[in-house]
Image 1 (cartoon, rainbow, N blue to C red):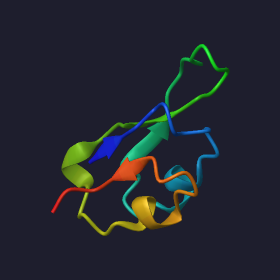
Image 2: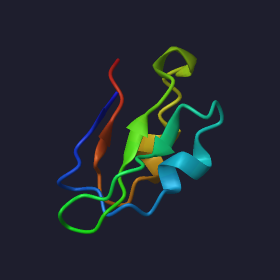
Image 3: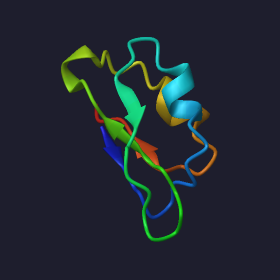
Length: 64
């Protein structure tokens, strides 16, 4: 899974819709004032693609 922080606006939809709580918002705010998600627990990811599907900014790519 990869998150393009340049595209992310920090809406947190990916965090809310992840059924396995893989993602969480970063504790730091970037230079644009955005609190982007990070992959907190990658081993929990089942590649369900929900985060990718709900991201309105196309900032998340889940590998095959």
